[in-house]
Length: 70
Image (tube, rainbow, N blue to C red; front, side):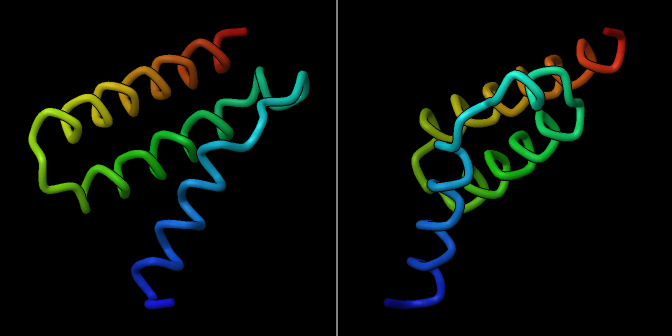
């Protein structure tokens, strides 16, 4: 398995991990997810899926901001 394939596997695993009741209110959790999604989007070539991923990252940032206020 190449380094890129291994990285993609790791990113997909991390993004697919569950949000627990404890992490739900953690701004750090949401910012880490946003960073992972942006990294994945940075490797995408197709414009539409890349744009979708970047919007998802922005939504994670919004959740982080919400968690900071809570």
